[in-house]
Image 1 (tube, rainbow, N blue to C red):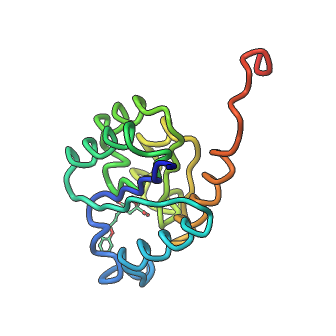
Image 2 (image 1 turned 90 degrees about the vertical axis):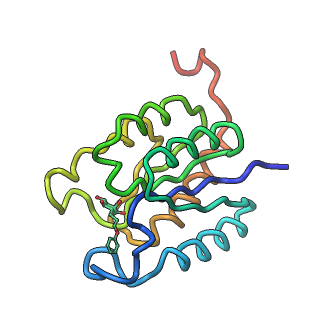
Amino acid sequence: MTKPIYILNGPNLNLLGTRQPEVYGTVTLDKIQDGTAAHALKQGFSTVFRQTNSEGELVDWCQEAARHACALILNAGAYTHTSIALLDALLALDIPIIEVHLSNLYKRESFRHNSYVTPAATGMICGLGAQGYLRAIDALKDILKRPTPNKADTD
Ligand code: CA2
């Protein structure tokens, strides 16, 4: 059986839908989970969807994804901008990683312009709100069916 796509969410994303709707929209994380799981299922993927406020737990889950997931979608919240531990964990993965952010980081404060996740990610989606999670599934559908190129083809 195909391994699931892990969808991991970092600190404070459990508060979605309660405050700052002008930045993050009105949708709750539960609704994002339901919508993403349904969309993934239509594309033939199962999902594991989690949120944590703890940096260590997020690192543990990335390590778990290395063993149990076919791909990772990650919204690391504010750890995106601070966590070298998370970057190190992600660099050890050899599955596709799509970084997702609800807001457009580049329209916001300059401290949000740097991401420690992006150097380890296959691609990054930001500014599309909850749609970003669905577009990440679509991208993974394409990426995962892509055959690994022969070394000769890339020389
Ligand atoms: O845009 C995103 O998805 C972010 O990852 C969200 C993080 C932020 O630190 C990143 O720079 C961008 C923050 C999530 C906090 O979400 C809240 C939602 C409602 C109320 C308070 C916080």
